Every structure is written in structure tokens, then in C-alpha cells.
Length: 194
Ligand SMILES: CCCCCCCCCCCCCC(=O)SCCNC(=O)CCNC(=O)[C@H](O)C(C)(C)COP(=O)(O)OP(=O)(O)OC[C@H]1O[C@@H](n2cnc3c(N)ncnc32)[C@H](O)[C@@H]1OP(=O)(O)O
Image 1 (cartoon, rainbow, N blue to C red):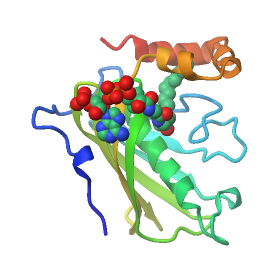
Image 2: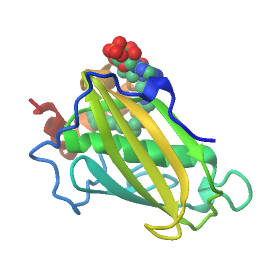
Image 3: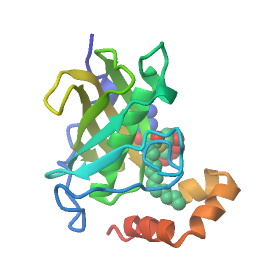
């Protein structure tokens, strides 16, 4: 059974999403927003190492290959890991809007088991924006970009200021991030959003 709850239905006055003029061109990799991110960071040995590329409009594609460290049942991906892959993919869309946002709600359908070694081909798009609320949807296919849908999700992201992380994150990681020039550059790219 699948479907989207009322909490993820955009209000009547929601707007179509607007791609930021400085968003990467279609086909360009988005890169990691943080080296230690479980979803996209290169510094997490058991992370997903998810690689996203910009699509047309406010959409993207991403790939993630299930590793032995991602098992739940023997030989199969853990559902929470698959939800993480969807969350990361959906969160990456905000880079195309140049908005910093965190997941408020994530609704996931698990349609097919996903064996270890499988590459998940993800597609996501922002469907609407209403004030600070960003509505988006994603699918993950197996066997190829046109294969059957194994997982899908709808989400609501909520725009936040950088202070959200500075005030709530553990000080050691916040200080390390803020003293990394690459991280500061990536964060500033969001802050210049008009
Ligand atoms: C240096 C660092 C750089 C970092 C770079 C980027 C990192 C990116 C990382 C990405 C990593 C990957 C992604 C991740 O994993 S992000 C990590 C997982 N997510 C979180 O940790 C978020 C935790 N939650 C919060 O901090 C707050 O609850 C937020 C910020 C979300 C809202 O609290 P806030 O006090 O600010 O706002 P509000 O409560 O007035 O709500 C505002 C509006 O939203 C609506 N609403 C809220 N929640 C829900 C809900 N569950 N269902 C339906 N609606 C909901 C609400 O009704 C209201 O609507 P309206 O009344 O206006 O109509």
C-alpha cells in the first residue's frame, strides 16, 4: 500500500519551485555538503557515498550501491539505510534552490527487497514550495535507471538558518567544520540566497 498523507500535501497557495540561477548545470555532480555526512561524505567509511547529479529544473539523479555494512536481513539492505538514501537524495535538492533545509517529515514505501551489491538509481524533484516548507518526492529503482521501483518517498523539508547547526550541533564538529575553508565556502554559497 502506498500514498501520501495530508501532512505532505502542499497547501493551495504553494508555489512551483524556482531553480537558483547559480545551481549546477544539468549533469553536473553536486558533491558532498559535508565530508562527515553519512549520506554523501567521503569521510565516513560505512556511509552511503551517495553521488548526486543535477537534473533539469529542480530535480536530480543519484546512485548508491548497497554495501555489506548496510545489511538488515542477511544479504539485504536495511530499511533505515534505504530511507537514509532517500532522505539524502531529497535533501540534495535544496542545493538547487540554494536553501538550507532539514527533513521535517519523510514518508517511505518499501516495494522490493534490495540485495547487497545492488545499485539504487534514485530520482528526485521538488514539487512545491510554501514559505519555509519544501515538498519533494523521490524514487529508487534497481537493475538500471529504468528498472522497477524498489523504494519511494515523499518529504517535507523546512528551511533553517545556519544557526540551526551552530546552536544544536556538537561543538567539536561545528568548530572543525567552521575551520575548514571548503566547508565555509559551501555554507556561504547557501547564505547568499536572496
Ligand atoms: C555548517 C553547517 C552546514 C550545513 C549544510 C546543510 C546541511 C543539510 C543537511 C541535510 C542532511 C539530510 C537531511 C537530514 O537528514 S536533516 C536531519 C533530520 N532532521 C532534523 O534533525 C530536523 C529536526 N526538527 C527541527 O529541527 C524542527 O522541527 C524543524 C526545523 C523541522 C521545524 O521547526 P521550526 O520551529 O523551525 O518550524 P515550525 O515548527 O514552526 O514548522 C514550520 C512549518 O513546517 C511545518 N512542519 C514542521 N515539521 C513538520 C512535520 N513533521 N510534518 C508536517 N509539517 C511540519 C509546520 O507545521 C509549519 O507549517 P506552517 O504552520 O508554517 O504552515
